[in-house]
Image (tube, rainbow, N blue to C red):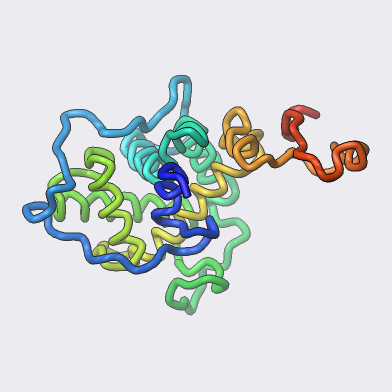
Length: 239
């Protein structure tokens, strides 16, 4: 397995959609040689030309750092933020999903795990805003810097602590926040580009997905047993 693929799997596992194996707890900043204190964010948080409907600059910076840590730029694709993941999340939170129009929020709530659905009294916009604020507060208290001002190794340590629920957030479960955040990042990377993410169909090209279903059904026999190498088709290509 290549180093590039291993880097992408550090959080989401070999299947691309499951939580990673257990890791040691994050050490305090004074004992952690993985962290640095750059004067500027260590990773790009906003691609040139991106504009946001509802995210603040700090929220966009946090999400960009998360997206670029989960999906680093390498030989497989550009980074998560360069692929428009933060734009996708912004549009989702600015719309009906962010308002929780189809989400049950009355409780009772279960511990976060697969198959239990939404487990918060807050609609997604409020939940992610509270989670981002809590995450950065914890990062500053633990490492001395907000997540987007940690180097890549430091961001990995911090995100893995959230993944295991070892990060002490105020008013929100860090593990639940991580699970929901990972889901949005994956959606932004693999969804149809018409929703703001998967810029230039980067993830589709990476996995060889042809795009909009049924547009290639007439070619099935001609390409049977061979790699389908045509340009993938988005909803926007037919709009």
